[in-house]
Length: 605
Ligand code: AGP
Image (cartoon, rainbow, N blue to C red; front, side, top):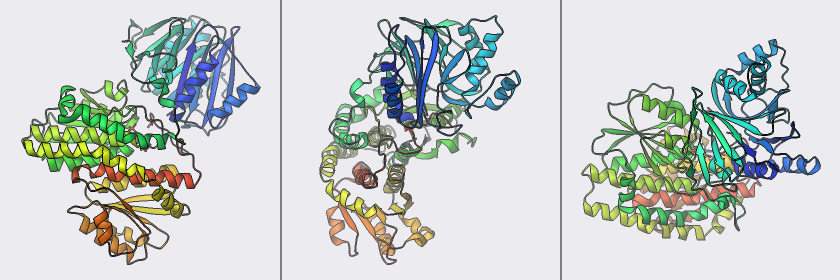
């Protein structure tokens, strides 16, 4: 949920620290800070709010040094104030932390009893004082004291650690929260993910849980949880430094929406026939009796769409679960069952914990992630990559449709393996997938209609999204998009469910966005729409030209989607929902790429 960076380059570290923070700001932006060591003394600067405020502070009160750590925060314990901003210090130690220290209250009580004084409300502040306690025993070097101290921490941490009087090294430690090591020519780096390291280096390795690292100029010593010196594989990161560049778009979200046709074309053309997916090893779909799909947020909705596909085209029973519910439910799981975990970041704590539970129950673990080096990928038996490129906007768009593309090909693989899809069926589905990117491009060309609709939504307090079949998870996704970036309350509802209560919400101020692709369910959705219209609810109809033309009810607006095969409707019908939420947020002058209270990767419970 937060982002941390550490640099030692023997000369000036502040630019690299700030560059890293800029690429991590999507993980949280409630406050930011950094600390450097100069002439053996630690100096820190911290500010509330976005990184720009720290930049301003450094312009007024500059600091510079040979080694440093930095942090951008998504508040978990303690309000987003300067006092609670990282770094946190004792007299001898300064720390930046991503994660949650679950036993911090007990530790704080003991440390205060020992005379250590606290100034913040955070869990993180126990770390510098605890390390100091071990140093004050006098028997341990700073790095040995830190290595011992972190073993007393319960919960999750990724740490950067500086020591008063030391400018030849800094330390880092990881348990449960991601931390990458970057290898420069002379410099050494740590960061919460490889993207933050991209401008400095593409040679990265990942600390394992329990690892502790001592980084000096051009060298790193990594100790495992048993304090044995170990090597962690150094890989070439696939993340490009220019990933964090909006180009001519006003926001990353808009850029990522418009990248979708090219990305989907690339995925479909390079992977079609599922050969590549099969080669990347997946579960043997002929062998499993059911599949459990587990994820959070938008990734969960992608899995929900895939449930309809697996059941219809592969005759495979699919259970779907929100990770934060599944991880605590002790769900009974079938012998040699399989579980698929979907995560754009590959770092979502709830999804990772659910994966660990399923693994402990002997399930085959398949993951679908957008970051190959991520924690979830590295914990899986089989990994399928969404290959959407780095997604910076907090609201997930291109990752969602890339997830659908990978899932669609897994479904075809499963349908063939289970003898459900004939060669003709396979040709029909793969043919539809091939046509999908061009149709997506057609939709993205006409954005004026969304800007007009957005104006009519601008003062709305609440909106409903309805759909049936695979359009039901799209309704849920459309509601999530609208609420998370425009702050308009929204609810996704199965169209057939309206009459079982939610229809009480219908009035002239509550627009209903109906996701209604043609096909067997369209007629039923249209009759639900009429129920809404009969009660004065304004309708925004998303459908094909024929359905729109024959609609015998008034609409606030209609959005036309090109004719398409049922199988690819979810790819196309989500695009108007993404654009609608984007322009509504624009009309309401919201912070589209960094919505309030959110972070891109929720790496804490
Ligand atoms: C999507 O727009 C949201 N930002 C959020 O729901 C996100 O999908 C969820 O947190 C899961 O993230 P993940 O895919 O990285 O696991």
